Image (cartoon, rainbow, N blue to C red; front, side, top):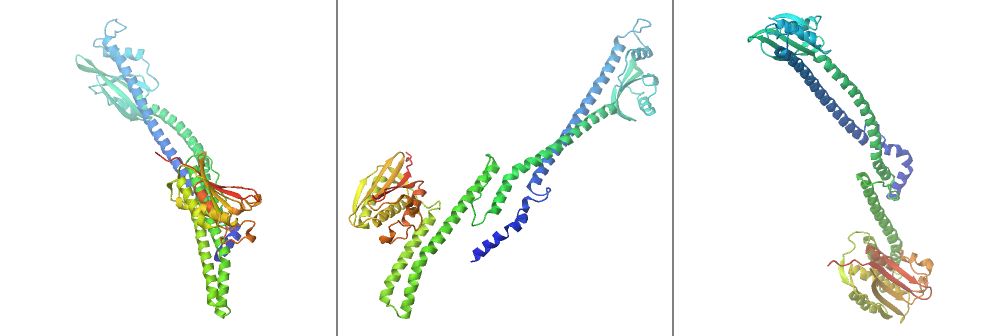
Length: 492
């Protein structure tokens, strides 16, 4: 009663509670696995983009500095070549000690690039330059170099940014007579680098935004099977375990969905077995309990004698015990440890079954055939299944009627059969008779001590071995029940 009440409450409140129960996967976008995945993707993309921009800035800056240094070195090399090999165009002779002429000729012949400038000093005094209107701060910093005695390379800060210089003294008779200085504005070069980085940063930001949107959509598609798992789990009750998750693909999420479906299969089988056991037990135990209770009431009231009541009570208790054992066997047949497999010789098993059949009833027992080979089976369970088939044959035949037992191996399968000469099984009954507590159509005319579980047990044992039961029968001409199981080759 408590179970029924709980199930009813669940069913009636499902519609109202559904929005709340679906909450974990319908929360705001800033929460949940999807948001965490997106945060990781955005974080990694942002970190990689930032690292790329920093590395790019470093590389471009190094290349700018290298290019500026090469340009300064080139100008100095040209100046030194003029000092060493040049001739004064006015006299046609080497410059000799005329440092002023060297400076004048060099400044006339060489035009600095847009960001370069030449400065010359004679005996520590400014001589000529290519930027006479240069910023006062720049001129001041350059004048500070007039006393340089050795080649010097360095940087100083001007109004437009860093300026790199290369100062080369000019010596006459080993004495410094002049100074040649070439400068290049690094700040403007670096501004171009920063412009490039700014454009790249804007592009990277756009890519990051697009990638984040795509990652958000992709995360939704990746997590969709998980939402299906949650929705399926919420929709499942102990009375409805039919729903399964559609599996598409072969990745980890698909594996999770398959595992979840397999778990549902096991749960459905377990619940089905439980319901069948409770229903069958309640149905079949009710009659003997009623009989026992009735006779005990008669004994208590004095309407019946003890010696008349006790045999009936004991007989009903024995029947209840057999019934419970059979129901437990059927319930255990769904467990993975139901069978204890071992290699068995089919010919020995067949002869053993035939020998056990004789004491069952007064029938004309015949050995119809003996198969030769080894099977990997549970010997006790298989014996129990065949004995149930034998009892079924006995119940549908009379004294002296022939019943045959046989076996064979063919086409990779083993068959163990029991053939009777009873009334046969109508086509309409061939599926029903294997159900629990089902009896043949002649049950009313024949006394049967069983509860209708024999054929169900036989089929459960056959299916546990990966096999089946074949039924061949014509109404009025008997029936043949055969347990067919696949034969596994014994490893050598």
